[in-house]
Image 1 (tube, rainbow, N blue to C red):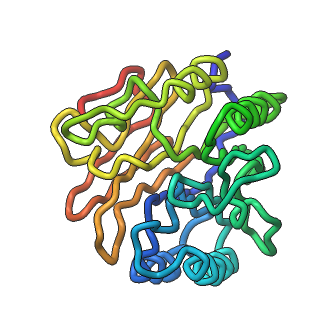
Image 2 (cartoon, rainbow, N blue to C red; image 1 turned 180 degrees about the vertical axis):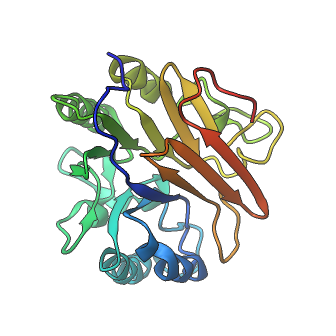
Image 3 (tube, helix red, strand yellow; image 1 turned 135 degrees about the vertical axis):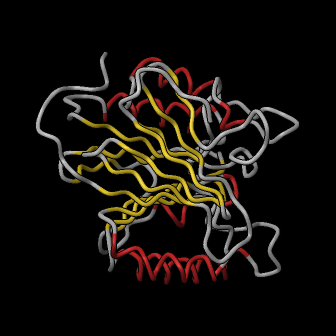
Length: 257
């Protein structure tokens, strides 16, 4: 299936960050700028299991921040491996706190929504065969009658891209790469591998077929690494700890990072 369909160009400006890891200064910065964008994507690992603050207390604080952010813009947040807080009915670990019903313009694990003609599908971190099957079914259902642009948010980057490389090892998500090959979304917004944008052999973007994938990376600074995507201009701009990158999404082949 061709992921780029012709039609009227809609403009959605998306601010993308990931791996906030309970850094309150970064969350404060996001609250300062979120209102300038049509959507804020948080691609997993909002919590930090290594933090001295207990996870249950972090969740209370994050709930407050998410409520603040969703009063400013549409917020699309998915779980990462740090966001799991216990088993579901199937016995596999999940982010129960993030998957529950929220007020306001906050959308989380398992949901799909359309924003000015752009469909976003929000995939949870899966822990085993049951939750993996749920993600697979979610993507298949969301692909029915897809609009001109389809964006996935999924914490782990896909195999076959430099987004998986931390400078020493590659942490490849083969399942995601397979689903991309099957459904060909326009964009996949990821995180998880903190170092990828800065190491030789890594990058903040990659391409599988017609699908662009992104990973803004993570550093412990007040202004987190982030990406701004303009769906009408078909461009993506990366800002990462003093470095910048620009990508024309209409390129027929992936240029060098």
